[in-house]
Image (cartoon, rainbow, N blue to C red):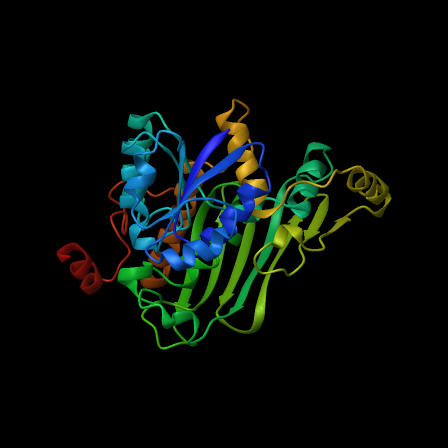
Amino acid sequence: MIGVAIIGAGIGREHLAGYRAVPDRFAVRWLIDLDRVRASDVVGDSGTPVGDKIEAALEDPEVDLIDICLPPHLHVPMALRALEAGKHVVLEKPVAPSLADCDVLAAAEGAADRRLFPVFQYRYGRGTAALDALIAAGLVGRPQVAALETHWNRGADYYANAWRGTWAGERGGAVLGHAIHNHDLLCRYFGAPAGVSAQVATRINPIETEDCAAIAIRFEGGALATSSVTLGAASDTSRLRLVFEHLTATSGDLPYAPAEGAWAFTARDPARQPEVDAVLAALPRPKAGFAGYVEAIADSLEGAPGREVTLEDGRRSIELVTAIYGAARSGKEVALPLAIGADFYQSWLPETTLEDVVGA
């Protein structure tokens, strides 16, 4: 049984539901939040202790895993504290505000001999499980072209939290905080990006960070992708269309769990569609979202790795964000991978914001 402490009762509510969906693998020992009333409301009558100080979790010998659900500017310092305390870490997205910080986390993970798991729960669900099975059956082929839509509706209520929409608090806008999940899914199936072109804009809300983007990605294997991002849509939708050599996969439009939507898998050669359909018919129903995500963590910690999200995956997501911001500001394609010392390796924050953050 893996003992867990959740730090933050906002999105932490969803994490708690994920752990409770696999009660034979996890025991939630703490929910820590500055607002103890909110934390008590989240745990309900389960008997899970609540507190308002992270030390209670860090010092508890029955806690093996610290799950950090805090605002982005607190991710790295809290993760470092947890690793130094000898705990494994689950870290909400974005895993870090720069590639330099990702490398600091990697060094700390190695020194502590513990694991850090970035949160990309979109990977888990019926749609992605079906695509994985079709790939294993040899029915998919090479990636060719993809189109992504992250079209959400975010207004004044969302930005009522003072840290949201600011470079200092959120460290980025729609590219970092919203499209990052779809981009992770894209790279999971298309591989490592080799070049990025991008435009970003603030068109919807009176905020510092971007709320719209148009992105073009070129992959090492030659595949191409476009990503359309806005926080000014009439409703929240996430959609992926992945075109492979032998098959096209089209997701549904569920915004927070696209892998659970109604996916369509269409063979390019109609004569092979029965093979595709047979694989889909035999597929068992997997655990989805946070439940699937934490189940993969349990497998990894108990000696069966392979399905979990790794820090390397999290770093790749931040490398892509870095390249997007770099391409948008330079007006040129940015080649990947990015070396230590590359533009924005230390930070993509605007200089005035960076001065404020460093000064603080």
